[in-house]
Length: 89
Image 1 (tube, helix red, strand yellow):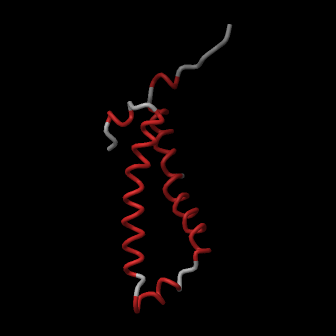
Image 2 (tube, rainbow, N blue to C red):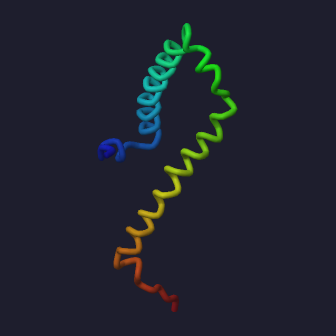
Image 3 (cartoon, helix red, strand yellow):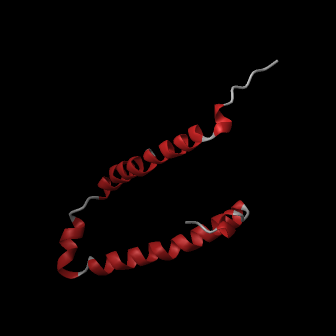
Protein backbone atom coordinates (compact mmCIF):
# COMPACT_ATOMS: atom_id res chain seq x y z
CA UNK A 1 0.00 0.00 0.00
CA UNK A 2 1.21 3.48 -0.74
CA UNK A 3 2.09 5.51 2.33
CA UNK A 4 -0.15 8.47 3.13
CA UNK A 5 2.81 10.84 3.23
CA UNK A 6 3.47 10.16 -0.46
CA UNK A 7 -0.13 10.78 -1.45
CA UNK A 8 -0.23 14.08 0.43
CA UNK A 9 2.82 15.55 -1.33
CA UNK A 10 2.56 18.18 -4.08
CA UNK A 11 2.43 16.66 -7.57
CA UNK A 12 5.88 17.89 -8.60
CA UNK A 13 7.57 16.46 -5.51
CA UNK A 14 5.61 13.22 -5.87
CA UNK A 15 6.78 12.91 -9.48
CA UNK A 16 10.40 13.50 -8.46
CA UNK A 17 10.21 10.80 -5.77
CA UNK A 18 8.54 8.30 -8.12
CA UNK A 19 11.09 8.88 -10.88
CA UNK A 20 13.94 8.76 -8.37
CA UNK A 21 12.69 5.36 -7.24
CA UNK A 22 12.07 4.09 -10.76
CA UNK A 23 15.51 4.99 -12.12
CA UNK A 24 17.54 2.62 -9.87
CA UNK A 25 15.13 -0.24 -10.59
CA UNK A 26 15.53 0.32 -14.33
CA UNK A 27 19.30 0.48 -13.95
CA UNK A 28 19.36 -2.81 -12.01
CA UNK A 29 17.25 -4.51 -14.70
CA UNK A 30 19.48 -3.11 -17.45
CA UNK A 31 22.63 -4.22 -15.63
CA UNK A 32 21.25 -7.73 -15.04
CA UNK A 33 20.15 -8.17 -18.65
CA UNK A 34 23.46 -6.94 -20.08
CA UNK A 35 25.34 -9.35 -17.79
CA UNK A 36 23.07 -12.25 -18.72
CA UNK A 37 23.30 -11.44 -22.44
CA UNK A 38 27.05 -12.09 -22.51
CA UNK A 39 28.81 -15.16 -23.86
CA UNK A 40 26.69 -18.18 -24.85
CA UNK A 41 23.32 -16.69 -23.77
CA UNK A 42 23.60 -13.78 -26.21
CA UNK A 43 21.92 -15.80 -28.97
CA UNK A 44 18.82 -16.37 -26.80
CA UNK A 45 18.52 -12.65 -26.01
CA UNK A 46 18.98 -11.69 -29.67
CA UNK A 47 16.18 -14.08 -30.62
CA UNK A 48 13.61 -11.76 -29.04
CA UNK A 49 12.82 -8.96 -31.44
CA UNK A 50 12.40 -5.43 -30.02
CA UNK A 51 9.32 -5.19 -32.26
CA UNK A 52 7.56 -7.61 -29.91
CA UNK A 53 7.77 -5.28 -26.92
CA UNK A 54 4.90 -2.88 -27.83
CA UNK A 55 2.31 -5.67 -28.31
CA UNK A 56 3.43 -7.32 -25.09
CA UNK A 57 3.10 -3.98 -23.27
CA UNK A 58 -0.37 -3.40 -24.71
CA UNK A 59 -1.51 -6.86 -23.64
CA UNK A 60 -0.09 -6.40 -20.15
CA UNK A 61 -1.72 -2.98 -19.83
CA UNK A 62 -5.04 -4.42 -20.95
CA UNK A 63 -4.88 -7.25 -18.43
CA UNK A 64 -3.91 -4.96 -15.56
CA UNK A 65 -5.78 -1.77 -16.46
CA UNK A 66 -9.21 -2.94 -17.52
CA UNK A 67 -10.18 -5.14 -14.53
CA UNK A 68 -9.29 -2.39 -12.02
CA UNK A 69 -12.08 0.14 -12.80
CA UNK A 70 -14.72 -2.53 -12.25
CA UNK A 71 -13.90 -2.71 -8.56
CA UNK A 72 -14.17 1.08 -8.28
CA UNK A 73 -17.57 1.02 -9.98
CA UNK A 74 -18.79 -1.63 -7.55
CA UNK A 75 -17.50 0.46 -4.66
CA UNK A 76 -19.43 3.51 -5.88
CA UNK A 77 -22.60 1.47 -6.42
CA UNK A 78 -22.48 0.23 -2.85
CA UNK A 79 -22.30 3.77 -1.42
CA UNK A 80 -25.77 5.05 -0.41
CA UNK A 81 -24.94 8.60 -1.48
CA UNK A 82 -24.68 7.52 -5.12
CA UNK A 83 -28.20 6.12 -5.11
CA UNK A 84 -29.82 9.51 -4.48
CA UNK A 85 -31.60 10.94 -7.50
CA UNK A 86 -30.80 14.61 -8.11
CA UNK A 87 -33.57 16.81 -9.52
CA UNK A 88 -33.24 20.39 -10.68
CA UNK A 89 -35.89 22.88 -9.77
